[in-house]
Amino acid sequence: MSRRADPERIHLARRAAIRNIIMQSRGLDRELAERWCDAWEAEAALRGLERGSAYWDAGKAWIDAQCAARNRPPN
Image 1 (cartoon, rainbow, N blue to C red):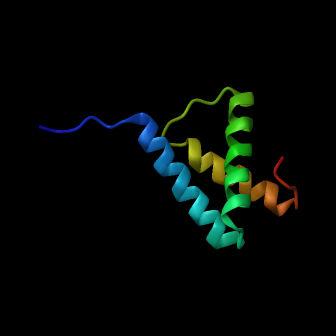
Image 2 (cartoon, one colour):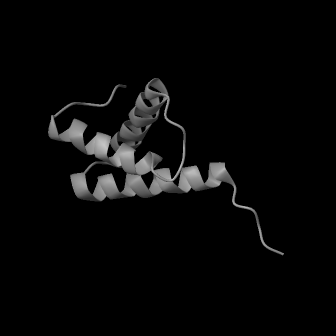
């Protein structure tokens, strides 16, 4: 019997992967990387984006752009 993919577990796994990537590539600590992920989710909600396969790819691009502009995530 095959298991159905749980969309929430997939979303959380993708979020964790992006968090780990930005921690490594940007030298961020876990708390700051989590804040960036939270900020992306808020931005995506404002844009009306649905979670899906491209959601966290867009999130990483947005986070990278924010970091390049030397912005800080909200508290």
